[in-house]
Amino acid sequence: MGKARRTGRQRTRRGSCDPRPGSTFGAGDFGDPGGGQVDAPPSDAEVRGVLFDLLGEAFDALDEPDEHRLDHVTASVAALCAASTTRRTVVRTLVDSTAAATTRAWQLGWQPADVHRLVGRRLGATEQAVAVDAMRHELAQYAAATVDRQWLSQLSELDERGDAPTAPPSVSWIEARRAAGSDWFTLMSQVVTVLHLLTRLPELERLTPLPGEALPQPQDRHDADAPPAADERILSRVRMLLAKAESTTFEAEAATFTAGAQSLMARHSIDAAILAREADRPDRDGPQGRRIGVDNPYEGPKAVLLQAVASANRCRMVWSRELGFATVVGFEADLEAVELLFTSLLVQATRTLAAAGSRSDQHGGSRTRSFRQSFLSAFAHRIGERLHEATAHEEEAAVADGANGRELVPLLAARAEEVDEALSTWFPEVRQARVSAARDAEGWHHGRSAADRAQLGTARSLQER
Image (cartoon, rainbow, N blue to C red):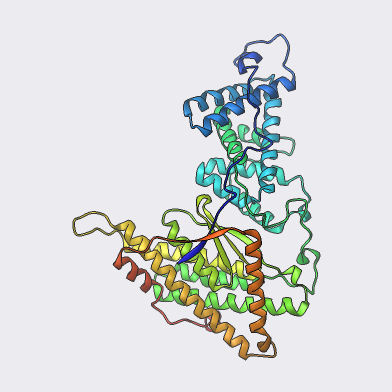
């Protein structure tokens, strides 16, 4: 299956917060942190100059890469933190530098979840927690009403996953991590690598207003005439159905629950479109973009699955393979459906693969990877067909039911054009790409049957369970 792949604007670049090259001081110029004395404490400007020079060296070591040199420079930064005469200036400068790098990340189109995902992909879980601290500190400077609610939701979810140490507002997040038990060398290693990643981020499409520039949403203003595009009551029912699909060990039952969830979201999407037209407020329900992680292993078939789910829910998708995510463009109710269904289907497919076990060829060699790749490819194709069937069924029922039916077809066509226009605006240059063809016949047939063992259930019958 072909998918749009992003091109251009992938070049990394240095930011305004990059450290300055050319050191004129060394960490030892400020005395021995183990107890040595200095004649006079260094000025803040001198300390910052040395720190920026050390960070420049650390960034060069990370770019090359040169682990030995990086450890040496990190030890020098840690020594500055350990020295009482320089600690306050170094910590404050590092907090300010990470905040500036984070601000620049927002300007380049990155959102909290995007940064968190990339840090985890390239660094690790501990560095992810450091990045969350830096993002939380930066976003705290804006009034909550001027930050897109999607950003606040992302940050709240990341806070729930993280291990941020508690500290009073007067204590910086770096000091809080140090007080929680981290030694200066380990902490500086984490801070420096996160800061380096932030200053090397490529430019992305800006999908939402920047922090400080977002306008209050209708539901934020308690506007009774503009119900939210994604009704939480509907989402709760969808989550319930998908939870049942994920928990059952019977593939046929899981497929029925999943189809029911798709039918319910398809009907909700139709209702949202009609409400938006009746309210005559298209500006409040225009196409949006949402980035969804697509990680290894088997990232190609997973991208095919996301494309299938997006297409069945009237959305378009562009896959940024190098960055580990895809951008899905559509209306809010449809985006909610895509994210919920894709996440659930991955759980279901992974469970089925685990139950299938490993595979070997006639010579005893492993063909497990080929089997699983083919399984996921077939699963994605067949699930896409079934989701399209569920969506089409709901559209046909809506057209035949009520006074709005006659206008529904042109309404949905107009919304599809809006999605295409938004995609063209954000991604003026994309190309079609194909994922490697399935090579394992058993995996292909097994994957297709896993998605094709039950007749489609209706949303109404499933809601009654």
